[in-house]
Amino acid sequence: MRGGTSRAVFLREADLPVDAAERTRVILKIFGSPDRRQIDGIAGADPLTSKLAIIGPPPEDEPRATGAHLTYTFGQVEIERPEIDWHSLCGNISAAVGAFAIQEGMVRATEPVTIVRAFNTNLRRMLTIEVPVAAGRVVEVGGYVVPGVPGTGARILIDFADTAGAATGALLPTGNPVDRLDIPGFGEIEASLVDIGNAHVFVRAASLGLAGTESAAEIDRQPQLRALLERIRGVAAHRMGMIPDPSRSAVLSPATPLLGIISAPADYTDDLTGRVVGAGEVDLVSRLMFMQQMHKTYAGTSTVCTGVAARLDGTIVHQYARRANGPTVRIGHPAGMIETETIVGRLENGWQVHRATLGRTARRILEGRAFVPAT
Image (cartoon, rainbow, N blue to C red; front, side):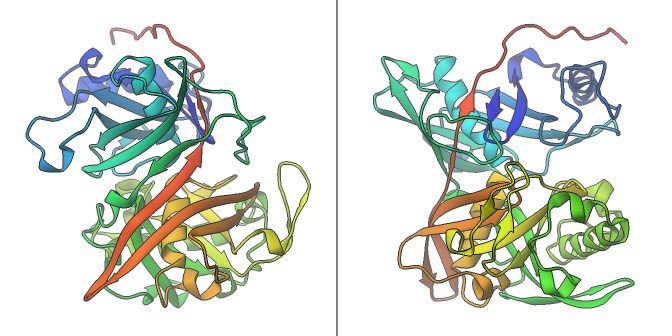
């Protein structure tokens, strides 16, 4: 299934081996990993298409899962290493989870919108997914545009409010809107560490000598810069308590935290269409590092986290974001603009997220059997 700008193989938990090592072997064979082309499997040789969704029944002994229709486990399948990263959550694929649940009869279709409550086992938090339905079927055709996805579709809305602090224990893991990180071979850099959807580290483009409007390819062509970004990500992961050794971030936690490079609204060229995105169309500009390379569009959980960070006084994202009266935050990324609906409230000792949404489209592409060698 395609969900937003990503594609995943969906498997039922009951169809997989119970033994963890055998389960990993089967999944890697289905995907064709490890191999940079994934030629012996059905994945697409790109981090955005090497994704996995395991769907199971709702848990019986998890208080936070009360009212869940199903469990959803996300896996980022490594392409060139025989590994699966279970630490993160994919917002794009979460949209497809809602559609899958209705198509498979796990949730009764109710017009015009069916609410699917999916308990994500990676973060142990609930996702609320609003799926359009007509005549008892999931609506896939519509006029909603997702930059980075050809054509249009019907909008599916995912609310990630319950995932605040799930990876690190707090929305602001260190309690600070801005921290100073000491980066080996570079020195100190200011960063904002925020955890909703997935844990993130945000830095100023100017701190890296960037304008912030560079294309993903321009940044990817600079190996020294990419190495620096990974060092920043590793130090941030260590500061948030996610890994014991910041120098091994690419192995210990390759997918999270994601790293956002933030700058003020500005004109730039859409990588996909060549159209100029005007500064007035966005509230801030960001470039995203995902799986040690630049994201060609913008991750779903990053959309949510960036939007929430824009509402938290003092964060780097808040410093650069255009102020708006309504809940919508518009984020400029390499392939256009993505928006999120964000509502946060002040608490005596912090913040509470009331709403943090992502609009996506989803489509079932293929169903069938994958054949796995015995050894």
